[in-house]
Image 1 (tube, rainbow, N blue to C red):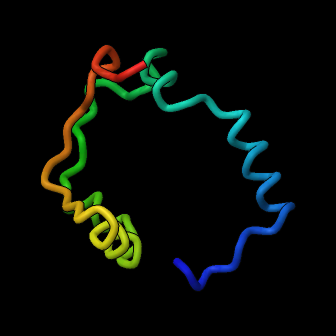
Image 2: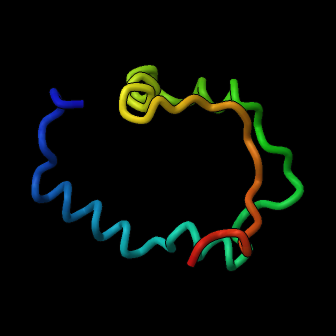
Image 3: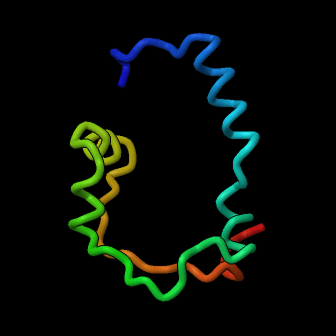
Length: 79
């Protein structure tokens, strides 16, 4: 990640504009934006979607390992 160039001002402006248009994840959950009833994919499938270098960085920074997937109820999210 250190080898990647810093985003240009134009790229950062576009990112921030897109972020302002979106709705925060906690707000989507409160509004029922999550698809209910659909089974969650297995951890192995989710891990395959993530680039290996990202998984390696997660491990280095957080010593994080995925062990399961679970759905969180909107009322359990912190304000």
